[in-house]
Length: 138
Image (tube, rainbow, N blue to C red; front, side, top):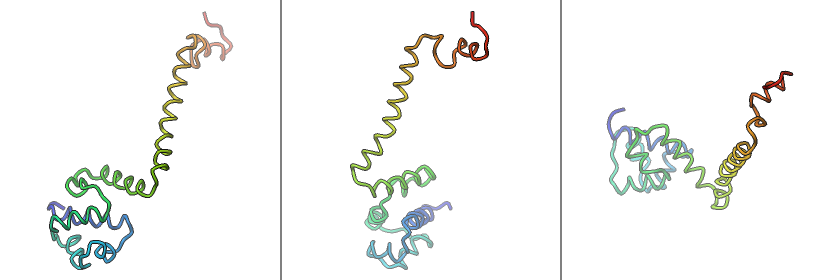
């Protein structure tokens, strides 16, 4: 797969399949014939810039997916995440976004609390190791 048209076709096909759409369904959304869509996906047909814009918008994919296909797997993951996020309302996204921030804040709080403890009472110190083993620490 070396040519631009082959990369474009495979990208369009993969995005269409990701949405579980048939060629007919996507063609209807784009107001083109299924045969023309098939030629874009399989026969190296390059669409006009207007149609390319409609494809990007119709499949709800990033233009980077089309213009930078060498980004490969990372770009696919970003597109999948974009599709998933488009299914949620703003409140749901804000709620999901707050979870990692809370974990990060809690981790920082614990780290700060551990640093405030005297060195010989911190978890995992040599004094604790010795007392656990029944020995003394000098």
